[in-house]
Image (cartoon, rainbow, N blue to C red):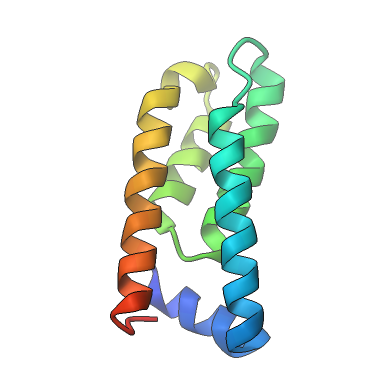
Length: 106
């Protein structure tokens, strides 16, 4: 679920303090994006999924990034990745990332 190589690379590039700040901002923004996901407009949804894909990828949330990428490419992104599934994946990815960081995995 978490690409720890990516997490370590990001931490190495921006430093420990920078990583903590970036992770906090990305997680807050992703939570808001999931909550406010535009469902009716497929193009707006694709744009939101694209942004979440990038943030998830940067934080090593590989499974979430891949799910967003698949939905973004879909003819019907809302059906490809329903909001409740996306929210659950985000919550699981966030928990796995924070738990792993607390245990020193990244």
